[in-house]
Length: 344
Image (cartoon, rainbow, N blue to C red; front, side):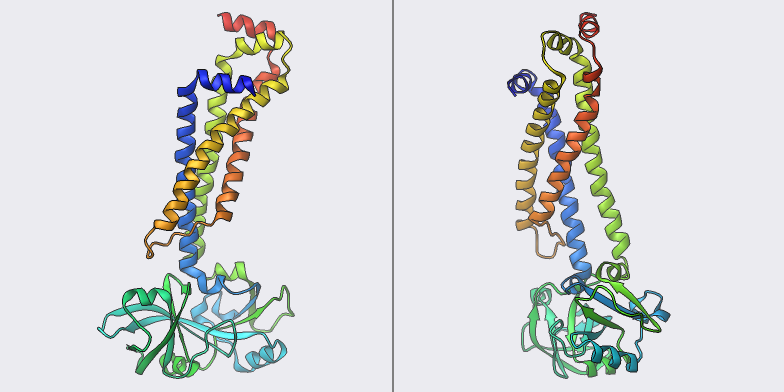
């Protein structure tokens, strides 16, 4: 421990450069992770808020929600068999506010259930983001697809689908708007497996999220960037400590000659890695959490402490692996040979 501190004091600039790079990489990783989570919520909060369960969609739809139509007889059988199940439909559309400004929304209707908002004919419940656009309870809204007017009855938090605010409407209004007599989907909560239903595909929550347009491609791209940055941080540690070890071969030879064990030298290197990573992560976590609180409401940014903790653990693990691999040469070094190399 003392040797690690002394070396860091004697080579402040080198370790500060490494710490600065780790700080920048980790901060960028946290920010991109926050954006990935934020876009995920913005794209699928309606589905993510549901408990674990199983989704049913017609096979003919080929994993496309908009094309799914579940036969009414099959729907009745499933809902009667599973009392907690709910049938629902989602369609993209537009609402016009009192100033005739058009708002892109996702219309959602369902059978009676505690999992979704239940509204009367001519009424709507909107995502909270619509209130930020000036819409208030009691306002009358119109749609080019609907002959009447919608009365705003209330708002709900974090209900988004395909990057659009959700609008809960009555099933009869939905039928009038989309000329649809069947529901698109059935959700059975708290079930891990069910008997196959003829004509229907079944999905877990995670599998169903991938049927949402753009969700899989969006998340795959952003998560790949996050893990790419994590790997880069490991490579930085490996290269840095490798170069340091090459320069200190003579010192290692002397230390080994006077009886210092290889394990002690590894502990010195690990201590330096932990101190550098810990200081860099402390600053980057503070700044990323501050950004999380201060980011504009309309920015899809969501960075939880759980995600931050998981990424921090990964950074320490990658740093440990990178520094350990670079230190293998310490184990192989012979005292006399290392001292001679140091003299050259």
